[in-house]
Length: 497
Image 1 (tube, rainbow, N blue to C red):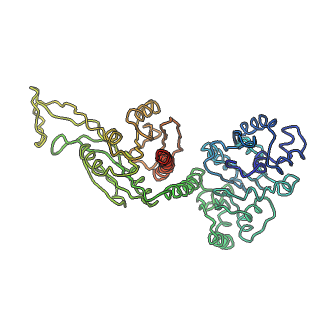
Image 2 (image 1 turned 180 degrees about the vertical axis):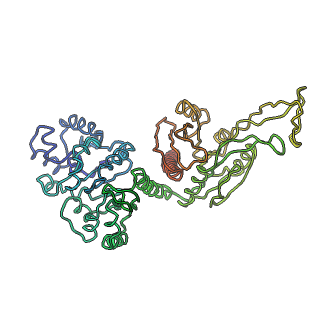
């Protein structure tokens, strides 16, 4: 079975034996037999398929050997459990859940009794299209062992908001409800996002408990400072939802990327970044607003993962990054030359904003002027545009073409349409598209929002994230694509032999 260990887990995802028997209008004992025999009769497959699609969980394929169903999880990238403990800020977590769901996380949610004073299980269920768990002791829990199933095989467990009371109980191993039983039974990484009164946060008991939890490997997302709901000012505010989302997503992407990059021997990455400058005369030049920040972030994050990184950069005002090989250039022709000299790589990423043209000065009598001397104002001159080399197209058509060639597209309108056109015309494996607008002023900024488009024209839209987080998102997609391409080519070679 794909992604599900057995039929029991499938029944659990649909709300348990009792819920499934009601939904299918059959006896609980019948559903129990399915779990016992690890098979579901073909006559029930269509009804189950409808239920699963309604909840955006899985679709079915049929196994020809035994005619049993094979569940396939739909679009799930990471598996995460969110535990919402009581506190006035717990309503904010609904937005976090929406973000996880929008980004194809496989989400489970547990509400403590205190949290149910502020939000209801029904609200959560409507956001994730599946059961919200609340009870430790019930007939369903006794049969399905929810506290064990929910605790296992998650990419991470997040408690948000995490109250002082919940922190204290975690520290001392108290397990008097479903959420705390899950924590004790968990084999997953645990994150906490505390929220409480400033005096409660600063209390030595709370700080001692936090130190103990950190020593056990629990990850703390520090609270913010500011005016609290109680009217007091200080540290203890729930971190902003975008901060929690970015913090947890960044952890998952890095973990996922490290697994991918260990897939084979050290990868060689070639990246271009920054603008190019096209000389008009010894003093003047034509360029663009690219800061180089996104390309530099890509280079540094690849290096952290153990890749061998060569970065070719146009002139920028940011610090030289820590990479294996750093090459500075000015013009598009210089950049192309250095790319060709270093084309022996696995992955080429063209994030540089290369000038499309250079300006060639002419007299009114159509005589070409030298750009080695300063052009005078009083001279009657005009400029002809000369097209610069298309670096990424050259790499795509090169006999030594890297396994993956990835480009960037910055557009002011018709973003997806223009990006897809560039993807096809330049024979790219993937393209990163940016819409340049007032709300997404990319150049020189710390944040970015992108669309990732692959050769099958699948599109993934990101939230607005830091360029470092965007870099990790791009790297994750790149390495997964590289792994798939490598495996495909390997199998093809094996067959031909």
